[in-house]
Image (cartoon, rainbow, N blue to C red; front, side):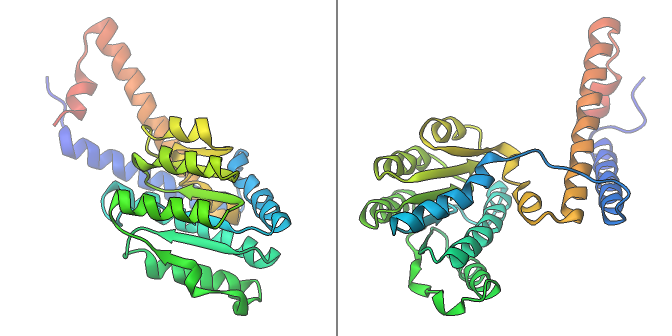
Amino acid sequence: MLPIISGRTAAFVLLLAVCVMILVGIYLSRKKLVSFKIRKLPALDAMKEAVGRAVEMGRPVHFTASYMPLSGAEAAMNLSALTLLTFLARLCARYKATLLVSVGTEQTLPLQIENVRQAYQAEGHPEDFKLENIRYLSGEQMAFSAGVIQTLVGERVAANIMVGAFAGEAALLAETGSRAGAIQIAGTPRAVQMPYMAVVCDFCLYGEELYAAGAYLSDDAEMKGSLAGQDWGKILGLGITIVGAILLTFLGDRTIPQLLSR
């Protein structure tokens, strides 16, 4: 017998369940009924070290969030990268390090300019903000890569931070940064690019660690509660998968596969 709900209806019910979990997590965290903790992310902790190294060497810090547009799956990746840019800009403003930002999409250019400007203002050094250090290169992959390579080598950067929706240029940029002698922090949720970053870079953010960066760096209770709710949703999905596999394998019961089928 077919289940009462299936396909998109079942997916919608599961989506509602996850939304409720997120709201519960935010409520518990906001009311301080539960203290959620995020495990250590060495890549984020290393950003202060990278900026300090640049200051000691008298060389700039470089940041890029790739050339991908704010659309599709890449949008969430690049918006999460902007959170790291704000944190990095505040570090650079605080320790008087030169920050160079390579931009590959005109959609995020005003966002990145404003993020850096506000970071310098928040640290009390608005006079140190230099618009010319935020450079739009190109929305084309190879042209963007060539511009970043020129910056890494020509400016002799001491630290290279590249996070966001990277594609085939990831290995090229990371290898150039390594040859330039820069300490490198990289991250992307795109699984196909993670191995290249892991081999060449000093510190990496893997997968959804990039999405957790905002909560980790800000220590915001509501953001932590939201992350907890999302984790509960993942546990729910994993549990349904395991139960469905067991029922199908040992009892031949296809209820859960039919429930989730289109």
